[in-house]
Length: 370
Image (cartoon, rainbow, N blue to C red; front, side, top):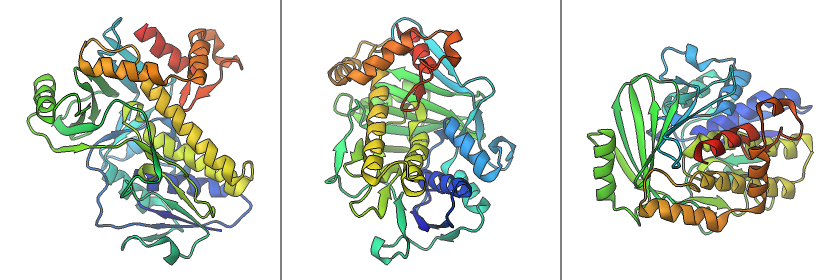
């Protein structure tokens, strides 16, 4: 069987790593191909990852990214939340003991992956139409769709981001700071700190957000400024079963909790279950991908439920959005998590996840804001 991945951004590279590793566990000969356009640069902003990224890099390539001195990866031991909720100023949410993720420059990550895989046909001269590609299955990771006719809106209070950077500063976590207008990520790389000021331009003008960004964080220059839609494909897998979307071609949701890279891997797991393990059929794979993404949407929205230290239009709007869209399964998982205790770490009743989040993680967040 031949699988062709279109695009070599984060989603394309993560998808490649997944199939590259797990081909060792199937009884079929798997031919892997990646097609991309070398003239299209990966997104120009530092990014945080979660544990799935570290895991697949090690499994697929045997690489500990922190040993690569010529790359600007930095270790990530968790997330520092600042100014969320109204009970405590800060929460450091760690990864489980002995585990770490990393911060990355997407262009360097692309180079690392494409230079490291073996026996993969890589074509960098441009993307092709589906009908011109000789392959059994296509995984389309080519980025934001040209129109959203075949997409559903995901519920979230943000729609705009300002990007900037600050001089190098050493810390081993992602900073996630609530602001009057939304929140700001701070990603420490080896040569700088990458910042993204997320807000809603229907509530706060770009000019006002720019001023607040500069005043609160001391940035001097806005490197990029763009609006974004938040969406999910109505049918992740095509009706004929030959094409599936991943990455921004499949969905986009704001960067809180660094859910994107983990989601790319989880989508590939569902595809693998269908294509090679026969645990589910195509329709089940389609439905499972969508339900997983809806759960990510709901859990991200949970972070706005208790507001922040700021009583502003944005935070009132965000809280009302959460209240209007809370689901029964989310409430049930919250109730389960509230009863979690440290000694329950091996109790089967508590070894459950809501999308990417285990009970102990949700319990930690709930204790912080409540």
